[in-house]
Amino acid sequence: MNVKSDFFLDYIGKLRDRGVDLNYLAEKYGTPLYFIDGNVVKQNYENLRNAIHEVYDKFLICYAYKANTCIALLKLLNSLGAGAEVVSGGELYAAKLAGVPMDKVVFDGVSKSPGELSYAVFEGVLLINIENIDELYWINKFAEEFNIKVSVGVRVNFDIPTKTHSNISTGARIHKFGLNVENAFKAYSLASKLSHVHVAGIHVHIGSQITDIQPYSMVVDKVLSFCTELKKLLGLELEIIDLGGGFGIPYSIEDSVFPLNDYCKVIEKLEHASKEIFTSQPLLIIEPGRFIVGNAGILLTRVNYVKENYGVKWVLVDAGMNDLIRPALYGAHHPIYNLSSNEDIEIYNVGGPVCESSDVFGFDVKLNRVKRGDLLAIMNAGAYGFSMSSNYNSRPRPAVIMYYDGEVKLVRRRESYADLFSHEIF
Ligand code: LLP
Image (tube, rainbow, N blue to C red):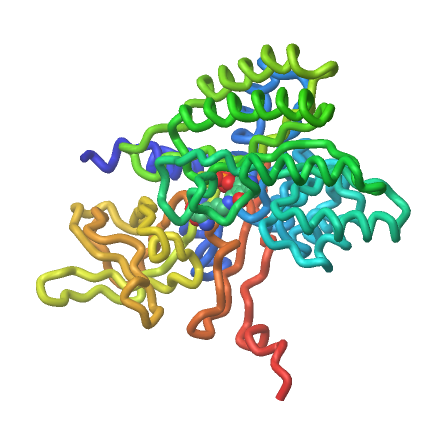
């Protein structure tokens, strides 16, 4: 493989052309350091929005907050018109901090607490997607207390398997998510009888990092026939179809790109068929996370040591699995580059400082010869990087900087040792 000609490296080159010097930024802000490219976020969002717009009029892209909740990023997406998909009280709070109008917020979650449901009802979100019949009683109770009617959707589990990592597949019968068809019908039937609940939508999210279109096509077929039955048997006509997220991105130059054109054909099918079922076009919601921010983030890390152990060359860096857990948790591949060297390529294992053998960002990584102090870029770290980070090994989490329209800003300061213990009572 010719490492020089891949698109990750081309991107680093383009950043340099735009005056974004990652080496300088790492010096200035220290490492480990998360870099977010707001222009890439904007481009990803607009590509998706424009593509869907070609085939469906009434739609809302609710960015999945769990991918990255950096508030500056959320504000940028809000300014572009994106809504929010949130799955906790904390994410709802983030949406408020980012100034997202509540009628663009969808509240999902397989085990929402009564407190979270009450918060979502109080804030007046666009839609609460339930996954348990009992949620309906809570929602109705809180809605009655606040004297409002709450729009509710039901997440249906149609038993659709996906070819993705088993930890991030969510739409099959073995998963905890959603309600099977029979129970979903019961939920709709009950919801339609509750005084403060408005039956509004259907929700399906089958998994993450999906790159083939077939499961999405299945989802749309199932949703359409489900809606037809719902109308026939319960006389209910839904107003919102929420197809979830899950669009995959390439993590290596061999990976395929999400077939957006084919996805749009599936949406077009939905558009045509829905004319037969609905009196007015339902609002289509999609909830992409990774697709919007995945390739817009880089984790910059400094090499602490290079050593050879039993014939294996190890590069030991200052970022760890607590900063980016995807390789340790899913065996995920993130391309890595040495930003400090043009010397010959050598093969290394790249490990972090955490006391776990799984704290390795890559095995047999091809890097320009590495020496102590070099700066490495771990690519595609925009989604599920910082948002899944922790303080394991009592490591303060990195600073985050964001580039947008020619300017780089510090958008999250590096945590201090004092921050680590600021909640302790002793
Ligand atoms: N909607 C719901 C209900 C979800 O559960 C998720 C992701 C999304 C939307 C957004 O999915 P996306 O478009 O980002 O694929 N930590 C894993 C990914 C877990 C995804 C969980 N749910 C990873 O690092 O790959």
